[in-house]
Structures are given as C-alpha cells and as structure tokens.
Length: 230
Image (cartoon, rainbow, N blue to C red; front, side):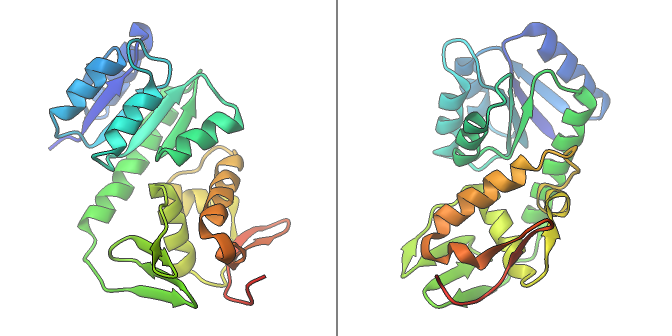
C-alpha cells in the first residue's frame, strides 16, 4: 500500500509540482491550500507524513504544527522560504522532522521524504525492548522514549530524542556531522552542518547539568562520553 502524504501549500504551482513528483514515486498525495483545510484534512487520519508550508492563509504553518503536535507525532517536513537559524531552531523546537528551504530541488524533497518514511517505518516495526540507560540521576528508557533527570520528565523533540538515543547506543564513538546526518536523519544533507549543530545545542540545553556528556571533538564532530559533571 502506498504511503499517504498530506501536502499543505498555498502556492498552486509549487503544490502541483510537488504532488506530481511524489505521485511519480508511488506516493499518494492529498493537497490542502491553507492552514484551516490542512488541519481538517489531517483530522481525517491515515497519513504517513505531512509537508507543511509556514506562510499559509487563514492559519499559519506554525499554528498548524502546534495543533498537530498536541495529538500526534506524525512526521512533518516544513517547506518554507525562511532560512535563518532562528526560524530553523523554532521549527525544530516545535517538533519538525526536517526543514527544506525554497527554492528547492523536488528530487531532494522526495529523497528526504523517503528517508523520513524509512526511519519512522523502522521505528514502528522495531521489536520492543526494555533497554534502560542510567547515569547518576539521568535515566533514558529507550523503549518508552522517556528521559528523566531526578525523576522529572525531560521534554525532547522527536529529533532530539533520536539523536540522544543514537549517542547512547554508540558511546565513546566519534561521529562527524555528515555521519550523524546519515545515521540519524537518514540522508546526506548536502553539507549543511548547521542542522546537526542546532540539534546538539538544543539537546544540551534539555539535558541541563548532563549537557557535557555530549562532547565536541574539535575539527571532527561529536561523541557521547560518560565523565565528571562540570
């Protein structure tokens, strides 16, 4: 059965172009031209991924995303003309799975969609385990996707959690930014290292006193290393 994609984009030309490319790849596409109709379409259920523009009539993309995240962790790729770090960071904090800037290559968008779908399908199909990582007052339940410090729940975005989980499962191994993009995001990102750096920064802030477990290896990348809390 073909994966179902909800495309929320107000520009007809872009909407038709993206839909044509996705359908040529065997994906089923439902189109919405504003935020209000996007929410209504999403509520019908059954979608595997949402492509969401930021600048939408009636209800903007950020508001649509907030409404979706109140009820669902469905993968969302933001499609937007905004490329500043603040906008990217804001999107990731709200739980965006990927962020592509206009103008863009439809082939690149298709590649990213497929990568996200592969990753989320793998998460759904993975056999549950009782893996539990503990270090001092930090506990990470890899099965329940739950992170606590001194018993208090730590709210992470989906991508923050995936990055942390990957680090925990590969302790003391140094990864370049390109390797992290490939392993965690599931594709080669064309050399934009800011995606990794932004998420590492967000994850460190979420971990608080345990932020230093994520070590910067200058000139190389990052690793997860147990040690003395600074």
